[in-house]
Length: 306
Length: 284
Image 1 (tube, rainbow over the protein chains, first blue to last red):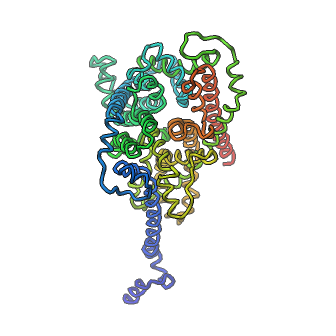
Image 2: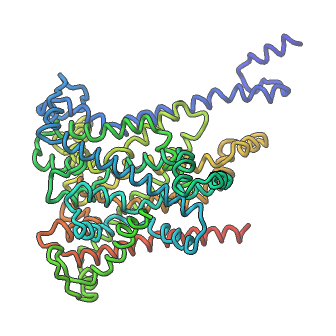
Image 3: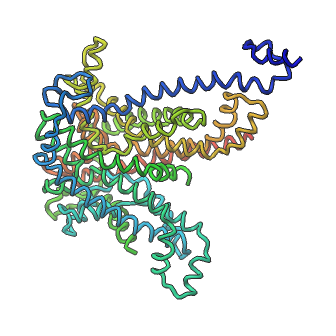
């Protein structure tokens, strides 16, 4: 009998399976084709993924080609000989070295300011009940959807009155000041969940408001801070509307995103230089993304969960 | 406290000030502001270009939002399956365009789509098709830009859906499988109903995102050719900053109307979901 069962098991035809094997076999029998089905999806997705990143591949490849090679067109991504001087040209003639340093200054400053002020505001709003606190949260939420195109004119006007238009400081203030409501709400939600004993213990020990905040609350909120910091970094690095308007009369203030447009406007035939400038501008955020992916994803997913 | 000062200066004040500016005649240079009442609104509302930009903004949104919401939904379902090989890798790749600088993508895409030497033209050449000037033709430019926008921000919507999918506990799937439900039935009777509440929030976020296309439009087409891609933000920009004599009052009026439009769209979506939810509850 045992030999018979064994032979049945080896039999590939599904119809000949003995009924008592019904529970074990279908799994073994069905898993394989299923698995293969997912591999088909994987291949399709891989082809799409290649097309998805193709513009970037093309940009990197064009940045290493000669002008002639680029203009000849074609889909060949490998340059004949890498032309590193394209990068030198973008860096010096195209002033991307300068633009990059502007971008770094603005981005770092804005990120620091946003983290500190949103953490503080989130702490106060999420942790304390005071008259009007619900109203404030309501106003925050209401301004969540205000587009830049709507606020840009008064922002420029205010900056002008403060004497901050056409300066990096003004640009930083405007970007750090513009509504970061989402960040405040993330912080508020996080702080609200922390147990109250923590600060009570600290207050009993004689710590003041700021010390409680700096010594206990801020370190505890590290995961949120990482998320907020990275998302702010990303938005600021990629910002275009505000830097464009703030650097109208002073090209020295351009960030990379504004610089790119100016570069193309002035050197419309220098495709390799343009591509090199693009790589210089985009590479830092891509590297940051690859290493900090978790926080990017969490920050964006947080919008849905809350 | 510093937050409230900054928030006040850069968010609340501009919202209020927009209303004031929209009521005055002002070129931004002189301190001279003449109160002109609602004449700016009248001027904006009779300007066919304004209505054209409203229409373009809405068309843009109607092309971009469904593609992003449903396309990303399919992708997220695939990537969420534990049996999908390389799911993490794919997630990274499809998210990648999101982190890159929009203004730079706009410039690069201009070259990618260039009818003379761009790779798209080369690809068409492989199939012996004549190259098309997608961005140079006022019939296709908007759609080319919209598809680029879909590509650029697809990853965000994908992450939204993945987050939503992860809220469904694995036990539910296991229980269904023990009860003998197949993949399709699990999907129809468990996954879909449990994701429905997320459809609202995801579509609000995605639709709202479609109103921020200035960076891409300005660098890719600058509203052209023949104003065929002039979304409202570019319209505002053109009157406020790009004109030789800035019309800030006029532009502010347009901006206020733009803000109202966004509000109406968001409110409509909220209302639609709210009533559909009530309907469901009534049925159950």
